[in-house]
Image 1 (cartoon, rainbow, N blue to C red):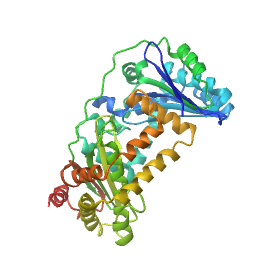
Image 2 (spheres, rainbow, N blue to C red):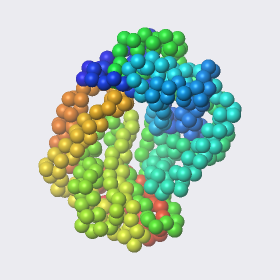
Image 3 (cartoon, helix red, strand yellow):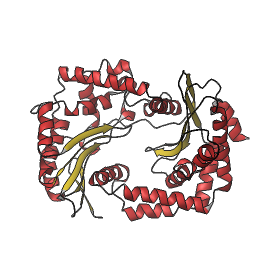
Amino acid sequence: MTYRITTLPNGFRIVTENMPHLKSAALGIWVGAGGRHERAAENGVAHFLEHMAFKGTASRSALKIAEEIEDVGGYINAYTSRETTAYFAGVLEPDVPLALDLIADILRNPAFEDREIETERGVILQEIGQVRDTPDDIIFDWLQETSYPDQAIGRSILGPVANVSRFGRDDLARFVDEHYGPDRLILSAAGAVDHDALVAQAEALFGDLAPRPARDADAARFRGGEIREARALEQAHFALAFEAPGYRAPDFFAAQIYATLLGGGMSSRLFQEIRERRGLCYTIFANSGAYADTGTTTIYAGTSAAELPGLARLTIDEMKRAAEDIGTAEIDRARAQLKAGLLMGLESASARAERQARMVQIWGHVPEIEDTIARIDAVSLADVRAHAEEIAARAPAALALYGPVEEAPSLETLNAARAA
C-alpha cells in the first residue's frame, strides 16, 4: 500500500491511497470533533450539525445537492461519533472533483435556514424516540453515561430532547467556528484518485481557511456505577463495562484479543458456556472500544428475567477463569480473527479512506497494514493474562440493566464476586 500525505500551510491535511484496479473512489472530510467536544448545554449539537449537512448551502438547495451527486450515480452521507464527525461520498473516477466540491460547499457555506432547522429538529426528535424504544440501543447510552458520569464523553451523541428542541442557527455556527479549524480537518480518499490533483483542489477550496485555536475535549475519567430501569419487556438487557486501554496505549491489542476470546465469536468463552452449554440466552458478546485517552471492554446479553441472575454470575465466573487459564490456542484463534477482520475490512475504498483518516487523526501518519499485523502478533500470552486479570479483579466497572430486572444482582454484588 502506498499512502501519500500533504499538509497545507494552514494545517489542513490530505491523505490518499491510489488503488489502480478500481474505477471508483471514496473520499470525505473527517473532522476531529464530536460529542465529547460539546459543553453540557451543547450536547447533541455536533449530531444536529451533521444532520444539517445536506440541507442546503449558499448556492445549492438540499434537492440540488441530492441531484448533483445522484446524477453521476454517486452517494453522499455523514455520521457523528464521540470524537469525530465525517462527511463522505463515493463516486466514479471522473466525478471525484464534483464530490469534493460538494463536500467543501457543505462544510464552508451551510445555509442553516430556519425552515430546514425546524424540519431536521423533528427528524432528530423522532430518532431519539426510536432509540428510547429500542432496549438494546438505549442500554449502551446508559452504560456510557454510567461509566463516565458528568462528562462529555459519557453523554448521548443525540443529546437530550431539551437541547435539541432549542438549538438554532447560532448554536450550529458557534460549534463550527470553535471546532472546524483547518488543523482538525482531514481530506481522505482512496481508490481511483490522483493525489496531486486532490491537493490542488483542496488548496483552492480550503487553503484560505484561517487557523484558529480549538477547545480540546476534557480528559476522560472512568468512574463506573449502576443504572437499572425495570420495565415489563420480554427480555432483560444486561450490559457490563470495564475500564480498558485507549487506542494509543501499549496494551491496546491485548485488550482487543482478550475481548475477542471472551465474547467475540461462536467459539468464545461466554458464547460457548452461557449460550451453547447452558442455553441461558440467545445473544451474548464482548468487545473492546477505545478513545484517545480511555477505553471500555463491554459485555452484553439479552435473556429472560428468570435466567438473568445466573447469567450474571456465570459471566463473572468466566472472566475470573479466563484470567487463570487462557491458553495459547485461543489467543492464536482470537489473533487470527482480529487480523482477518482488519484485512477483510479493507477490501473497499470506503473502508480504506476511513482507516486513513482515523490513523492520521491518531498518529499523524498511516501505519502500514504489516506494521499493525506485527503489533497484533507481538501480543504474548502473558500480556493477555495480565489484562484479563486486571479486568476480572481490579478495573472499575459499570452496570446497566433494562427490562424485567428486579431480581438482577447489583454491581456491588458482582464486584464482590470479582474480588472473591
